[in-house]
Image 1: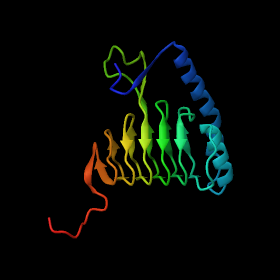
Image 2: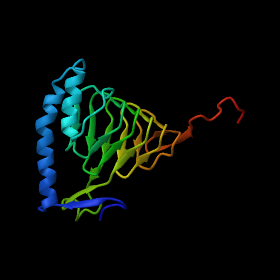
Image 3: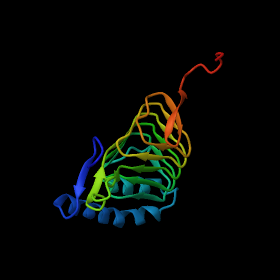
Image 4: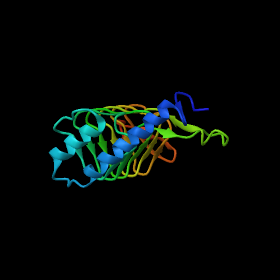
Length: 190
C-alpha cells in the first residue's frame, strides 16, 4: 500500500501506459537539452520549457546535464536556478517556487515502490514535492516524495529530506533535521 498522500500506479493499466509514454517523450528531449552549452541560455530555456510544457521567465537558468522521468509534472516559478547534474523524477508532481536555487547533483524523487515485498513489482507509488519561495537546496541533496520545503529555507549539502521543512529553517543530515531557524539571533548567549 502506498504511504499516506501517495498514489499507486499499477502495472498494465492505462495510467501505467501513460507513464511509459511520458518517459519515452522525456528520453527524446533530454539528450538534446544535455548537448547544449551553458552559454546557450535561450535554447536551454526553450527546450526545458518544451520538456515541462510551460513557458519560463527570462531569468530561469539551468546548467546541463539534467535528467527527468517525464517533465510535464514539473512547475517552475520565476528566477529559478538549477545547477548541473540534477535529477527530477516528477511522476508525483514537483512544484518549485520563485527565486529558488538548486545546487549540483540534487535529486527530487517523487516516485518509488511499495514497501511490502509482494507488492513491490506491482506498480509505482508517487507523492508530490513542493519547494517554497526563496529556498536554497545545496549540493548533493535528495528530497523524497510527499515533502514540502517552506519559504526561505536552506537544505544543507548532502542531506536527505524525508519530512516537511518549516519556513525559515536550516536543515541538514540524513535524515535532515532542524539545525536552526533562519534569522535567529546567533549572538545571544545560549
